[in-house]
Length: 272
Image (cartoon, rainbow, N blue to C red):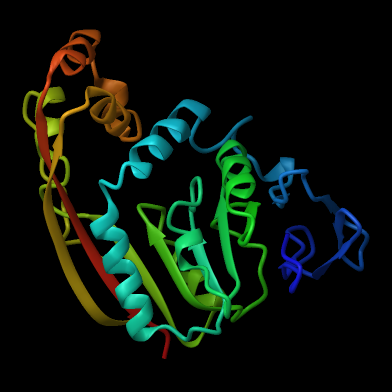
């Protein structure tokens, strides 16, 4: 695994470079972080955690993995990769912020680049590292990333928190940040089953202030389901799953057909 290169991290405690020695990453101040057998490294010190197991739980991760493997978000992935091919420096390092189980991460990997995925949930990183061994994965918080300044040429965030200051810090000059957020009608039909008055997503607010907006795209298409398990997996990977009643779960299990919209906004920014 990773025979041609070593991951480049910085210590989350003192910001010095980490060097892999056998199975541990160590800095000059002797802070040490072990590489797990799956290949990832946990760079989220316990004192930085706000809960015992932050991030998505195992059930949510498995539901998302099963749903994404069916290809329902393939048009989104295609749009992301098209932008990468059009604008990205193909030899620069790529960073997936909030990578989950690595679905988008590994599809950006080529023979010429190095690709990193970070998530705060250890369970999801464990799955990603075991499955996609040509990428580097680590547990960390997006608010304090374990990377040196200007490390990446291409950075993207799919539904993850967008922290402009930290993202800009690790982005190279002339590098790009791609954000994917829900557009007005994303999963509206599913939401309408849960909420008496379902609200559309607010797409007016843009959290990026200092980077230059290069391109903005709207991607909308219907998702048609003939397997109730796929609908239940979709529900399980959304925040409004916690609002779903047992009656609704039973109803969805019994439905032979269901359709709802996928609706995304893609915004590409550049660091000048």
